[in-house]
Image 1 (cartoon, rainbow, N blue to C red):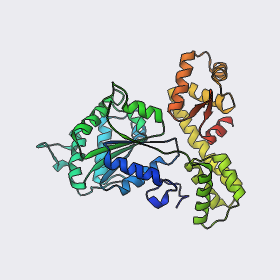
Image 2: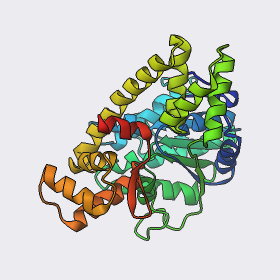
Image 3: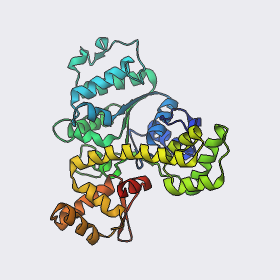
Image 4: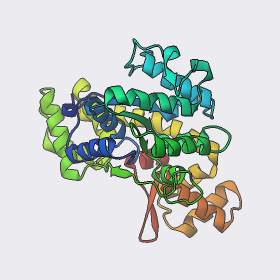
Length: 356
């Protein structure tokens, strides 16, 4: 169902993403590394799950945000290894190999107990399973959080992935990220100091719907649940929510259940308020000035000088270099974009909530 608020898992449950899905499947099947990018709530997780379900091999899904939260702001190698083991043993939501005992797996002539496994051991194990399943793909959703892996900003994990790239032909990797610039910085394909420097990879971008597609999506969703909605209300919804599928699904579901445009929009905005405030709190842990910058842009202070004046008025002096760095980070994290010398908030509901 198009208006099901849960992540999708079947091709027929996603709308107008055939090109992106086929590109993602091609990347998974043909490249050692595939990168799936797009802003928050654009549908990356659903697309990834559908692709893994259709993949003619073994696809393992891990949410790096969950690993980050479980570790209290850090991801230990032991936690990551244990999470992969749980998936393989069928204890997680996406378990596959419930009948296999990892204790019995022989790696290079040595039996390794699960508690003694390193990430390299696990990668070699997965590559061995690839001989049985054709290919194994390890998919990290919101992979920019992997920079909190281990004591060296994820470099140890990247080194393991580089080893797999070079030596384990039946193991591939998918990385998704809504903080697009940070994901690219973390993977470091173009960074000489990164273990993955110079590696070949496929990149698939998922963009918000164009206006016509947004309207068509809502019409198709309402038709699916047997509800006739006036065109003017569909257009008003797209005016407020733009082409971000996550919010369009939320609105469509709420309209279906309430039968009222006003109640549906109110509930959608309230739901967005909760989610966005949580995201802003996480952002403020990195720097409280991020929220000040976003509020400045939301109220119409879109030029660099005006933003600086607002931030200094609310939070004290800030150097030009520091402000520029924070703005660049917000661009990398997918919160804002710069157009013709002015900064704009990408998500219209983020802007609306910051104004309130």
